[in-house]
Amino acid sequence: MLMVREFIKNGYRLAAFIGLENSPTCGIHWGKHKVNRYNTESPNPVDAPGKDDPVLMGIMTEILSEELAKDRVNAPFIEFPANAPEGSSKEEDFWKTLEAAVLPFKVDAEKREENKNEEGDSPNN
Image (cartoon, rainbow, N blue to C red; front, top):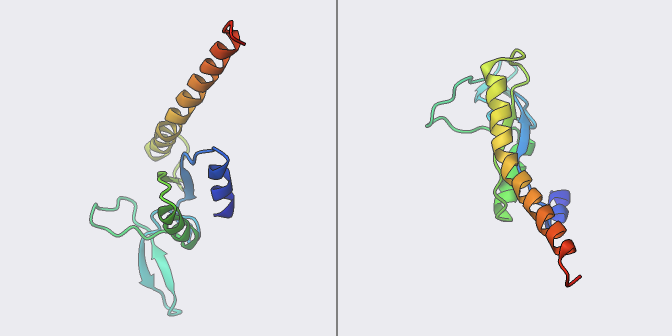
């Protein structure tokens, strides 16, 4: 989190957080908790969570989400479908979601570059 804060302090923006499907550390929707035969909790993956299902994140993702909220940093949490077959609709949806999260930042950067180039061409410089 210190690195994220430092980047933001220096003018960078967080476009998205990418988690890993079914990861107990960095998963976005880890699934429903269950107690296994060893009396420890483990995930019970949910492929299509309902709108009322709790979002049970991996431990690092949960802490990062809380810290970002404290700092009022708003970025989407997107889960990479590591277990989905290549070319599946789940994988395609991931890339579309990621592109939608990043594209506004790309457009902003292109506009800043255009403005910088226009300022360099002005007779006042």
